[in-house]
Length: 536
Ligand SMILES: Cc1cc2nc3c(=O)[nH]c(=O)nc-3n(C[C@H](O)[C@H](O)[C@H](O)COP(=O)(O)OP(=O)(O)OC[C@H]3O[C@@H](n4cnc5c(N)ncnc54)[C@H](O)[C@@H]3O)c2cc1C
Image 1: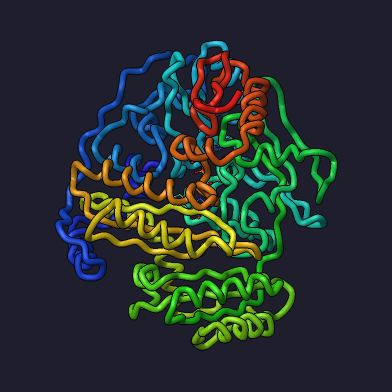
Image 2 (image 1 turned 90 degrees about the vertical axis):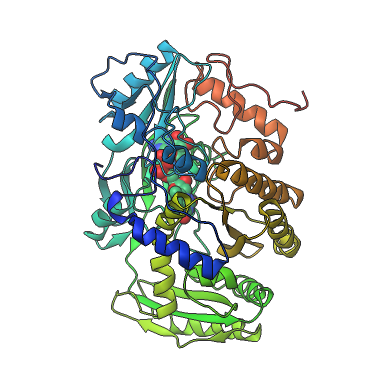
């Protein structure tokens, strides 16, 4: 924990030095056409006075802890931290190490009308862990680190009971000792937690099939201010609305997830993969649709447009690149890869040499490896670019195939218009379904320093409005948080919004849990307000 940065992604040790960032400014000028980038250092932090005293033994009021829990890792979060603004630091950070301590924490906060922000790894990019509570007496961050670890493995049913505060690497290391894996690798894997993944319905490793963490959840356990919400371990059930489905995506606003039984699987042994080049992005789109509608379920089916390919160093000639891969613990995947390659070639794809492995080791292919490295280094690049005075962020959505082309054109044009010239906007598919893709966009433009936030807001607003115009979702896997709440409000059915608000009032009558997330912030005790302008 000691090396975690208070403002940028990840740990100090992996953040590029000033010289490396200056070199990056020159390179990006050449590759992306950006100019005027200049390296700066973060400003001294400023913290607010604490509003409440917390007399629980598992509370910390140290400045460093308060800064690390002030907010998540969205672009505006990092920018505020870079500029020394820690106005959202909580009054205290509570780290309970048992459910009993957690229950006592919630009871204390309910009685004192103090807002509680559940905190997993703090990697939210939608303002999900921003310590806000304007209508409350104070705000505490509730860190789940004390409730971590793989607690039980059922090798017969292939499931494991895992503490909510378990981070990706610890979780996979423990399962690997049993020859098992969860195979959920969001880009934030190193620093995010199981509880956070479930609370936000995170999207992970598989590009098709079980794409969201939802598909891997067998049962959940959540502590609410009015009781424990624990579901049965079942492979499937038709008994009414699923209790797990209401926990999934609840984003800390209904209760605190303490553990879950997760569906795990043997570690893959057979892997076959190949990358393809498409002169036109639209042909790559048709190839992905063809593969995913054929019934084949590749674990990797990531399409990168020409700019995205350049950014991830897998192609430099403007062509789109499709990364295609299959894996299994049980049987060779070569034949399945050949079938998918056949479909992609019919749509204009030119395939590289396929690679296969039957040893459990990753099959090496240069484009796939470059992509993987750039994928996990990407978050450091974003932080470094921010320090150079750039505006850089990503957003994502999902839509049906019949609406994709129009949506894509509008999104790219709207973001470019908001940012002006020069700017860089790229697209890749992170996940694909038989009825539509989940496109993911990256935008980069010069700030300059001082105008970064307003430029970011213009681009974010333009993108979100374009998504709404085309009936797409405001998020496929980044969640709602506080940032997407105004658009989520427009997307969900009104009776559902009222039912959600009623459920919150029932589970959290004092209105302490993550105010402003999923539902607009209301007065404590009054429950969330009806969204403005909504029909009665
Ligand atoms: C660089 C980067 C890459 C990312 N890549 C991906 C990606 O590939 N796929 C993806 O889906 N997301 C991604 N994200 C977003 C983020 O990592 C996910 O939303 C992740 O699931 C958050 O996990 P966390 O443990 O960090 O949760 P936090 O950020 O700590 O919390 C997220 C939300 O969940 C709530 N919460 C956390 N733990 C609990 C709990 N135990 N009980 C109840 N509520 C809880 C919080 O209150 C908050 O509302 C990325 C973010 C970054 C910064």
